[in-house]
Image (cartoon, rainbow, N blue to C red; front, side, top):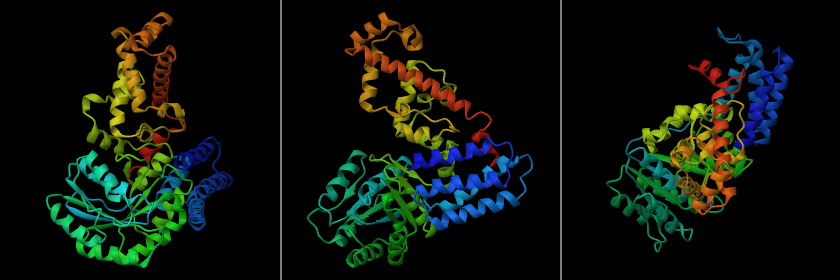
Length: 439
């Protein structure tokens, strides 16, 4: 959903940038393109119409800021209104707290509990998790397995059918944890006994935060769920999961934003690393290809040593096979490559899907192949002709096609990163983003 929405939004802005005159007709065309993109992403019609009217009115009535062209003025307004549509972000503090997770069955609460533990762990805070889901078979096993992989304590009892004793015991056992995350049970619908149980757990834990976990696929129905849980335990934040696999993500985002609950995180993958802090400005910036360098720096500081990642070399696009492997390996530590690349200011550069196809298995194969290369070949892949290629393949126990694939990937990455540095030519959203400072 985000890929399609981002592409459509960028196309609409690129079309505007190509016009010689920005008049009412140009603004109307831009608004129509935006409406189409947002409605296809399942954003509420009323919200889309409100955004459209605001963009039209402001574009035609407000005077551009000093030093800003009419075109940049309109783009700035679009950016601001899209950010406003997302609503404010929920509060996340790096301090001792108890976080209670609520949501229906299948929303992704259990995986999200482990992801949250990992998030705080990366920030240097000791987390602990309580599995209070006594309804779904295998819930404790799933959560404890996730937590064991990241060395986080998980308290639960698969034989106990009453969640309240588990929560009480968990709070005692995790007295040394700075952040306690409580995973509660979900059902297929908003049954009354589910609501009553979570009210009781909220009272026992005296939760600092009560966050609702929602599956993005639910779309605009997210509003009803958020309201029901809010009435019961006062939801103060929402985590939207599975944003990588649905066309209704825009509906979930806008529906929750409309409740004023505030989105705190977005989940978009299966591993414990796949949880992103939600920030409206950063979210829209990345959709429009402006990147999110602040988030990229934070992620790098948490997971990668300074000597492991030379961002300047990467942006120059001048790097050898040796450099490529070192940098991709560092990026892999930071999370999915596609997610990381979205944090770079891409402008209108569309990356080939092959750029993201870098699995751990393939990385291992590439390492073996490169171990068969000489130092000179690693520093200058241009030296590798047919004879050298077959020698490398034989030494690595690989096929010639695998060696060619590695060389092809290196060329593609080099070209891609030069394109990133070049941005979008005259339509340079990164430059425009600098002008947006202080909005």
